[in-house]
Length: 380
Ligand SMILES: C[S@@+](CC[C@H](N)C(=O)[O-])C[C@H]1O[C@@H](n2cnc3c(N)ncnc32)[C@H](O)[C@@H]1O
Image 1 (cartoon, rainbow, N blue to C red):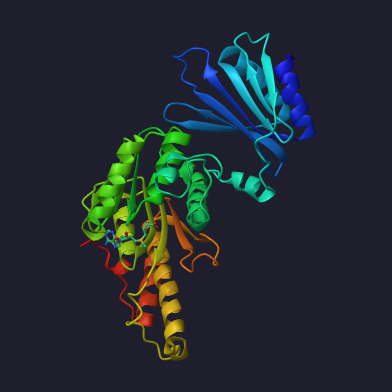
Image 2: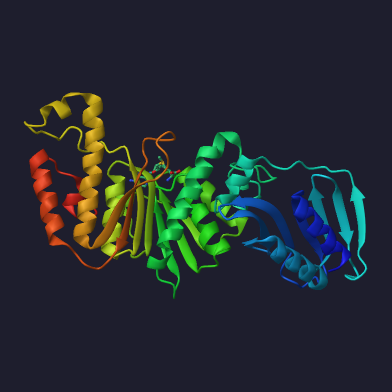
């Protein structure tokens, strides 16, 4: 072990490492531009997250102290001439044109150890504290990678969506371009997040389309995608019900209002999309329709009627998807304290239609005198 690795080892042993940055490439042509390391508190204990920055992507890896020391020594020998080590005790600059004879300069510390809660945030698939280009561009993070307080809810929501996406990856085709449609994408935080996660972090071959009614929003999103170099992400103006796309492997909707969600599900069904992740909202359709003598008290108060209509609407969606051959789970998307619109329909195509669910759905509709869009089974 040489003196640079010795120094790193000491910092790790005393728990003083705040971050380590490797830069100044030995060869200009080398694709790896930079490596940044920071401590992360994970379930298995304190680990060190290395971020490998390439031209258009960043990869992450969690390392224990021994692995980090080995990585450091190898990276400094083969790829980088300079390292900056920030600790609670001092800042060190290591200049290693000759890896066996590094020059180490010590200065007063300039950084503070982030708080535990800050470290906890690193559990996220997109961590707080590391600049993520699309989140910086959309104003969720500042240039240093810190999430702005007012956007923390959105940040958490995005990460939750990505966690759920990670869980369904095995159900998506892996041998060809993955087609994804985000219906009612709005300002497209989620659409950009899916691109970042699947294309940049995981290196999957994907094509994503975001659709929305609002032309100005769509123009803005196309502009941002172009600036970021997100080549296989594009946005279109259009009504979900009229969408003319012919296929998708994954359909997502986040708060597509009222029956817009139904039309998205109908498209997904017509394409036999492998995965649907849909968080409905504003389920107004059934509110004026419902009638039921036995359950009249449940419908007698506006707030009860409204909430019940929403739950019944999503129940019809669940049954209909099951009848088409989807395995459906209704899951909590984000905690109720952030938004009441927090039920996600997670549907994975099994290819086994279930006529009994169709029958159940019809009976339920008759029972409540309901005529939900999802039962009309066509996209207008
Ligand atoms: C509440 S916003 C959600 C935006 C985004 N998905 C998010 O969660 O940040 C709902 C979006 O759906 C769009 N939308 C509603 N109905 C639509 C329809 N029929 N066709 C296309 N977009 C629709 C709206 O224009 C709006 O941008």
